[in-house]
Image (tube, rainbow over all chains, first blue to last red; front, side, top):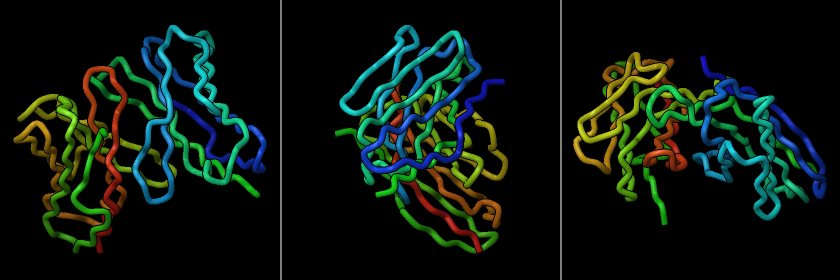
Length: 112
Length: 111
């Protein structure tokens, strides 16, 4: 079945770049998403990319999509302590209507 | 501004109680979803609804039911709460292939 994999933890120093990686299995995915979850809160949409794009940039965020390898990454430039959160990768699966398939989330820790 | 609200942020219930978790969205979205989130397991879909009075089982519907009497409201019901239903519950909504918008979550503890 469809699956989304991401590493569980990432630790960086403030000011460095963070790169969070994700792989997915459904080659028919049309949209891929990145969500951010701060402690005790719901998920907040960060950015998303349509499957016919290779890259999308939005201020400090850069999303790269390698459709051949089914690999998605989120790069956060100049990472700040406020970026500490769990980041979820998700794909719009071809199965159930409107059902997003989520990875387990990557916990980003930013050290001062 | 887009908004999905959930009736409670924190809830403590006893084993065997009937529990209602309410979710309301103000975006006129057709689709609404209930997920639970547990450490190490990520988000798992419990139920979703793509129209009023319509419901579909997600990946883990056992022990839950849902109700969608109005377009803006989607309720998750635990008929007889059990300790293994202690979790964070997240409601979300969308329309078509637009991104999911999430509520703030309800942290439910069943003792």
